[in-house]
Amino acid sequence: MIKRSEMHVILGRLGVGVLMCACTISFGSELAPITVCQLFNDLQSYGGKRLAVRGIYWNGLRQACSRRLVVVGREWPTALNLVDSEFAAADNEPVSFVTDRRSWDALDRLMIREARAGKREEIWVTMIGKLRTPVYVRADRAVSGGYGHLGAFPAELVVERVTDIAVKANATYDYRELLRRPQKDRKR
Image 1: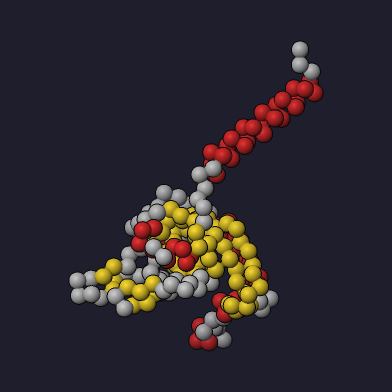
Image 2 (image 1 turned 90 degrees about the horizontal axis):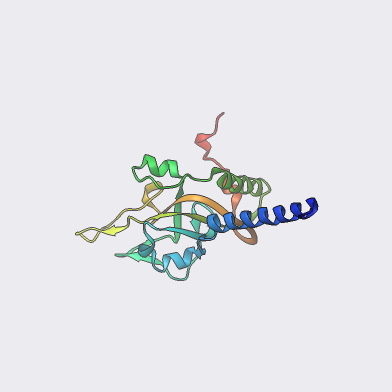
């Protein structure tokens, strides 16, 4: 006969085992992150794939890379435009997931807090999502495609969720700039 205290220990261990198993099932197939620079070394091969990309959160997800992306003489920034799953669906390219707004909102709150504090730094994050890469060369050798404002980005990440946020004290970006609006847009 099993004592009541032993039963609690057994059930507790069983519960922990089930929880560990569930975590392995849901998170065990997690993607190993690659940096923005690693992604841009072979950007087209990642098109349409789900991946985890690590970079600096600044007007997209970016990194200063030694190797540039040049397509038929046009140099592209080593940066990704970022959109959520609702934007992708509205663009007639739905994805099989819904963006975790909590994780992205937490990143935005951190960025706003750092900007209000007048910080010049880098906010590094890992973003998991599906990569879209439309850049192609037309028959007349002109480059077409691009995402974001004026098609300035060579690729776009439809963000599933944001993880692994880290603030580095490198004085690269002035996050206060993201809070500023042009003078004509301000209410008088």
